[in-house]
Image (tube, rainbow, N blue to C red; front, top):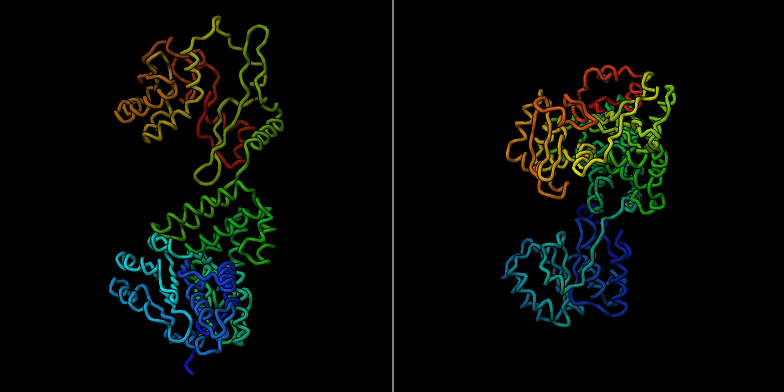
Length: 588
């Protein structure tokens, strides 16, 4: 007898043999028992999960000598003919080869004739979505009102290409991808029957490569038996199909979570030297991070996850190495890198840089950042920053607000600290001289100006969404004046070219639109060099030479610190070391 490949030899012959599709098999068996058999069925799902096998079993169940029965005997002539593909009453048609309207017309003529042996004449059309629109339309009437002895079973991998008028005339069943655990169980069963030694890790590696298709897994096992004989290990599977060992993937994830950059570089180099697919490595690592995230956020969902018990133990250990915020950030980095993979000249370099970013990434809440900065200040001999400003003194003086630090993620995966206000130094811990309060309350434009100054970086970001180059031009500018119909933006003389850039039509229109939305009235925007305007144009909490928030330049004679002075401050230096950051901007 000629050799039969495993995928054909182990093709399901009973409803109970179908793996992972219990919702379909139970419905079909119950329909047969209750004699509620529809005239047309549509099986939908990816390749290799049992669509055509289910159609054949259903045909056997209907035309069995004992039938219709939910358990065909497999010994009567009708069952044997259907199993051999030679039954005159069960016609399997390839939709890809019979796409035209002429073939459908022949089918319409043949449905008039009664079955030769069984009770029903059954038409199984595989890849039905390949039929042309004209062929579908020619089939509509027959499909809606076929003779009592005719049943249709359609199978497709692309249900969206089947005409809705066809789908509406069928009972639709969506078949699922088969879980890896069930594929592993099936492969181990086949290996035992075939007298092949297959270890569980090797079976899991095959299941990972099959991506939910049992037929692909059986074909891979057949190939491995031809390659290694009657003893197959995980290394054999990895060598043939270019997959990454599960323990290697878990070691790589552990190195990333621990921030062990030398270890992850070494693992990636070894995998690249072994010819592993870097894109597949990235996707499998992303899937592992997803499992970690699900385990950490919803431990009760572990039972529904498509993983083995040994993998659960690894998740239990690695879930304590990072919080959910960091895992989400890592997933975002890996997903973005996978999108760029097809354009990369060196995939290994892209993977390494992405993993280094993940290894260096830290994610902490704002409350945690504030607590750490307060601890640093206390350790340096200062007092922690108050969360709310103290009330004004009886003399009408308003004390300066306490310093606060904002931490932004740096492109390398670390953090850059932007110091908003002056942190306490040895000299600054003495009571500051309060600034006088204006004798009369500020007018509405002054309040709007103060609001713009406080929200300037947010305003810049909104303008940058409409004109990307405008953001760089405005980062070193600040609002000087707000009137009923005008907003004046000041530029330091050394950034005069930025003022010219903002006068360009696109940039000016973007700034005018955003500022009008914020102020809730139409306003015109003017751009000035601050050296060219008088003292009166400068707000009270800014110096006459135009320095202030966003300018990165201190007024002379006011005791303001330079960047180097800040770097020498023990609290700032300790903060930068703790968060692996750098000073990118200094504002009063």
